[in-house]
Picture (cartoon, helix red, strand yellow):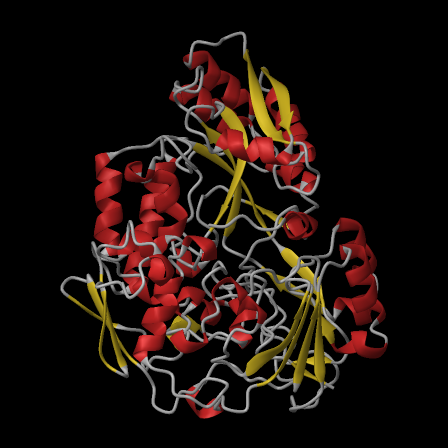
Length: 574
C-alpha cells in the first residue's frame, strides 16, 4: 500500500490514507439522507462549480503513475476503469461494480483467467471509441520505468510481466498475458488464482489510453478522458487542476458517477488550518467547496462540535487502516512469545487513543483487520488488557518469560508529529508498560530514516510502531503483505515485519485467493486474522476515524466504506 501523505495522515486520528471509509457514522443516508445532505433539502441539480481545497497537490495526473485513486476521488472523474467502487454510503460502498465493463469479470481455469466485455457506446473526450486495445495499452505503458508509481500487483500477477519494461523501451512489444480477441473483449492470464481480480481492475492502470495520443511523461498535462470530466488546465504539476465536462461521456454507460457540477476547480498546496477555516466560514466560492485530504484535528473538532451548523457539515469516515506495535522475533527478547504477550496485556488503549486525538478520532483495536464486514472482521482479543491495560497479568506472563524483575526494551518511532507513529503515541506506550515493570527507552528517528529502518530486513528493530492500510476493502491486501512468508524481502522494502513464514498460513492465503465468492473469502480472512493474532506478532492499537468539513452549499454527501473520502462524483452544489 502506498503510504499516505504526512499531513493527511495526522489530523484526523493521527492518520489518514488513500481510502477513508464511512461506517455507520458516515454522513450519508443513515445520518442526513444523502439526497439533501448539506446546503438545504432540495434535490441535487446540475450546474455550478465545485472547488476542492487540498493540502497535497494532485501530482502525476497520469493513470499509469497514480496509486489506486490517489488524491481522493479526483482521478475517478477523468479516468474510468474496467470495474469501480460502488458509489454508496457505508458498507454498500465497499462492493466492486462494473464500470467500463458489463460485469465485474468472468473467471475461468480456477480464477487464473479473467475475461471482460466492454459496454457499447464508450467514447474518449474526442469522440473516438474506447476499445479493449486501449485498455491493454494503458496497462502496458504503466510498466515503463519513467511512469512508475502505480500499484505493483500487475507485475506480480500477469504471466510473463515480471521483467516487462513497457512499450517505450521495447517498441512494439506488448504483454502476451493480455489478450484482445476483438474490440470489446479483453482477457487476462494470471500466474496463479486471484479471486480478487475484480478489485484490482479498479486500479487506475486499467484506464484506457489511446496509443496515438500517448505523450509519455507529458501525458499527465492532458490525459485523454474516459470519464465525465476532462482536464482543461494543469498548473504546477497538480497544484491547480481545472476540469470541465467531457461532452462525449454518457451517463447511460456510467451508473456510478453523477457528475452534477459543470466545473471542478482543484486547488492544492494549502495549509490544512486554512482549508478548515475556509470550509468553516463557507463564504463566496468556499460555500461550494470540499476537501479530499484534510481532516479536523482535536482542537478543530472541539470547536466544530460546539456549533450545530458546523457539526451538520462534518463527514465521518473509517478507512481500512490499522495502527499497531510490530515485533521482530529475530531480536531478543522478542523471540520469546511470552514477552510479546506480556506487552500485549500491558497496553493501555485508552491512553493511546487519547494520544491519537481522542475517541472521536480513534477507535481502540484488538484485531488486525478493521471492524468492517468487507474485510472479514472477526472479533477477538487474545490478550485482554481492558480499556486501560492489565499490568498484573503482564507481570505474571513476564515472569513466565523469565523476567520476574522486569526488563528494559527500546521502542522505535518517528519523530514527526504529523505521523501516526509519533512521540505522543510512543510515550503512551512507554507509560503503560512501565506499570507492568517494563522500562521502555524511546528511539525517535526522522521520518525518512524511520521508514528506511523499519522496512529493511537487515536493520529492522525488535519493537516499533507501525501502520497499514488496504488497497481495496478485503482482508487479502491487509494480511498477505504482512504475514505471507513468500513476501519477505531480504534486499528491498520488506513489510512482513514479523518474518512469519508459516506454511499453513501461506497455504490458507493461496486457498482464499482461489475463491471468487468474495463474501466467503471475507469469512476466511477473518478466521486467518484471529489465528495469526495468537502468535502475538503485533499489538493492534487503534483504527483511525476521519472527520472532514464541507461547504454549506454542497449537497448529496456520500462517503463509502471503500475510500472514506467524500465522493466528488456524487455531490452537487447550490
